[in-house]
Each structure stands twice: as structure tokens, then as C-alpha cells.
Length: 601
Image (cartoon, rainbow, N blue to C red; front, side, top):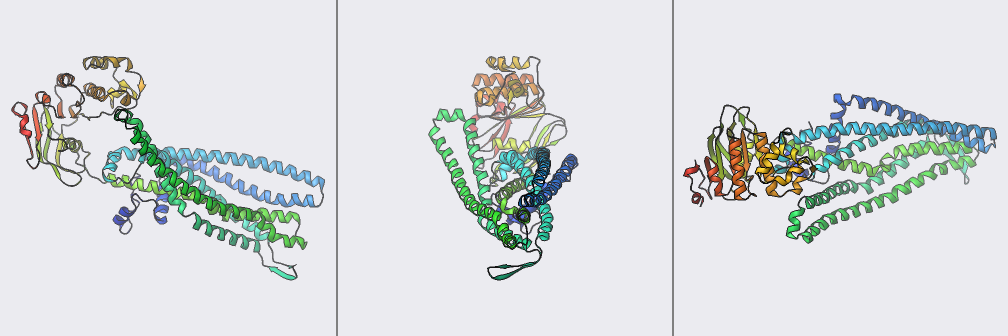
């Protein structure tokens, strides 16, 4: 759903993608179109019914806030006129009115804020669910790394940018709509308060046309908006970079934690500290630029806001001293002018927020474009047909279009096994990726037996967060029939039996050899018809490796086992050996008893 290219339909879309992918900012037209598409996806879906109801109440409360503003504006005139006329009873009456209006204002403001928050969480829940579904489907999370190295930190774009987009969309768009409503209402009020008038000033007759207060408010806001845009434009790029540098620094800290054991053994603390400091320098240096620019913008916006406080009084004062208007009229003019000026100055008052909003839109747009690009990457998909595992005319290349395996064909029946051997870097693991259907640089034919389960075990197993039992059964259902304990004993992991149902981060607690044995137990529990083992026993000693393969052969008698390994001791545990040779010599497929290890050289 969200795998939508932001450059589709545009002229020279290929050049645009090459130019802007990984950049700090997109053209405004592209950003606006992307924002519209993202907003439309939710609000045109059937899941937005509840949010439409919330939006109706928010609009109603916002309309109530506009009505309250007009009542307060009238109250200012009446209140100050009673003071000017020394009207004690009128004074207390106006205070009672104020208490009533203030109470309603508090209720409207609190419920408006609450309903906006409910709307945001509904939208974010839906948005995150859909993006995660797309990100995890069709191996997009994996393919993005193959084709697009510029889209950094997708985790941050999902966890933070989605929420920021929703919150900023609601606050800025509804805020802007509220400002427009205020503008329309108080333009009429301000027009009514600024009728044509002529009065003497410093010996001159000053003539002001109808609506002169409104004209002055528009000119004042236009000048402020222009200078705010000029001063604040760099904030868009700086906000984009700040989000990137913060995410990079956080990712470096995560890598430090995940690889703490290796770093400790290498005594690499000093090097890691340098890496982290270099990453943090980017955070600090860009942040300094950001706050300096915000300081410059702050000087202007605050000066602009302070001038706006006295400006309407200055232009109304001559009429007051000429006894054309009352003190109450001045306060009413000041209130109405401030409302119009605030509405016209919405860009000035929230420019930093709009800059952050555009940065978030750009990051999400480029991320969604990367997912679209990843979904268009075609991989060789295995077919499920017949009763045998068969590879026909398989060609596997690296990203530089160099052949790793050329015209490979083999056929395995249930109960048979094959060992793939060859020099490091020759493409043994890549062959498994191609057969699994996640390598884009391959062609040919791969057929799995119909309805057969497959399981892939890598050199570094994946152990999800949770209990050890859950890790052993992943991704299947939990097993509580004693087999977990039984296999742990056989594979020399009796000390882990008491931890079976303890939830912890076992990928950090267990050694690589222990993790590989846990993964082998996973295969024994799931009992796949086809088992791929990519150096899945490389960290085991030869005795435990022998026990593990013996156990697999005994327990998975009808399964096809496809192994990658370097040790010659594995040859006797397989029926066939597929050897990859150095250079252009190709490969050979022979029965295990006919295989000669020295032939690799």
C-alpha cells in the first residue's frame, strides 16, 4: 500500500530518483503531493469512520472557540467602557459574563485537545500497522539493504517519523483551518470597526478609508511572513539532518550493545569511543547550526509579536485623543487586530513546526519510495510441485553481474542430503539465498516438493526476544512434551534446561556454539521436509557436530538436507558433495564416497 514511488508520473523520474534519493530535502511540489497521498490513504479507508466522527466534534469545538473569541472581543469593549464610565454595577455584571465565557473556554480547549490526541493515536495505530505490513511483506526490509544504501535508519522512520507526521498533520492543518475561520470572522469585525474617518493630527487632516485597520493588518502580516520565510528556510534542511544524525548516533549505540562481547574481547573500547564521538559530533554541530538559525528567527518573530501588541493601539490612539472612539473601542480594535494578525501570521508563528513537518514528509516519502523500489526487485521464486527438490539451469551472480554459479542443475529426493563446499567467498551462502528466493541476481528454475515445509538455519541463528523455549520453537508453536529438554541433554546443553521458560535476550547470553545448537533443536522440533544449513554448525567442535548431524539424520529420515560447510568431517554425513572451484573451473557434483577433498585445489 505504501510502496508508492514519489517520482512516478513525473518527467525524468529516473533522474529525479537518482538526484533526490538520500538527499536532505525534496522539492516543495513533491513534498506536498506526497503528504496529500499519505493523508488520503487513511481518510479514504473504511478504518477511518471513528476518526471522521472525532473530526466532526473537533471542528464543532473549533467553531465554538471562534464564537467564544467574538464574544470575548465584544466583552473587551463593554468591560472597558464600564470602567471609563465608572459604572460599578456594570463592572460586576461584566465580570460575571467573563467567568461564564472563561468556563466555557476551558471546557472547549480541554476537550478539543483530548479529541485531537484520540484522533492522532487512531491514525498512528492504523498507519504504523499498514507500514509494518508492507515493510515485512515481500522481503522489503531485506531488499532495501541490497538496492538502496541511502535510506538510513528505517526503524526511526517507522517508530518516530510516522508519529510525528500524524501529530503535525493534525495540529498544523486543524490549526491553520482554525486560523482561517478566525481570519474570516474577525476580518468582518475589523472592517466594521474601521469606518471611513477624518481627524486632525499635528496640524494635518488625516483621512482613513473604510477597512483601513484590515488593510494595515494584511500589510503587516505579509511583511512579517516574507522575512520569516527568508530567515527560516534553512530550518527545513537542518531539521532533516538533525533527525538523521540523531538516528545514526542511536544506531551506533545499539550496535555497541549488540556486539559488546566482541568489542570487549578485542579491547576496542577506545576505537568505539572514537566512532561514537564522531557520530555525536555530527549531532552537536548540526544542532548548533539549528539553534543559531532558530535564534535568528526568534529575534525576528518575537520582535514582530511584541510590535503587534502596540501597533493597533498606535493606529487607534489618534482617533481616541480626537474623541472619535472610546477606550472600549480601542481594546476591541486591539483584540480584533490581534486575531486577524495572528491568523495571517500563522506561518510566522509556527514556521519551525512547518519546517519539521516538511522534513518528516521528505523522510517518509523517500522511505516509501525505497519500499516501492524494493518491491519491484524480482527474485527467482521457487515453485512447489511434484515430489522432488530440483534445481535446473540456475545462474547466480553477484551485484556486479559476475557469475558465482553458472548453469547449475541438481535433483534430490526425500531422505537425501547434499554438502556444498568451496573457497570462502565463492558464493555458497548466496546459492542458498537464491534457492530461498531472496537473491535478485539469479535466474533459472527451483522446484520444491508440494506442501513441504522448509527451514533455513544460518551461521548466526536468529533468537527472538522471549523465553528459550519460544526461541527453539520459532516460528512454530510451543512444544511442552519434553522434547526440548531431551535434545538439550543430547547436545550438551543440560545447564539451559532451567532457563527454558525464562524470558531474556538469549542472543546476548548464549555463545555462538550454544545458539547454533538451539537452532538445530529448532529443526528437530519443526521437522521440515527440506532443511537448509548455511554453516549452521561452524562454531561446534567436531564431536558435537557429529552428534548433531547424526541426530538430524535419525530424526529427519525423510527430509532433504542441504548443507554448506568447510569441514571434511561433514562429507560422511551427506549423500552428495557439490564443490565450487577457484577461478573459472566451475563446479562438480559427485556422490560423497567418490569425493576427494584435495580436488578443491
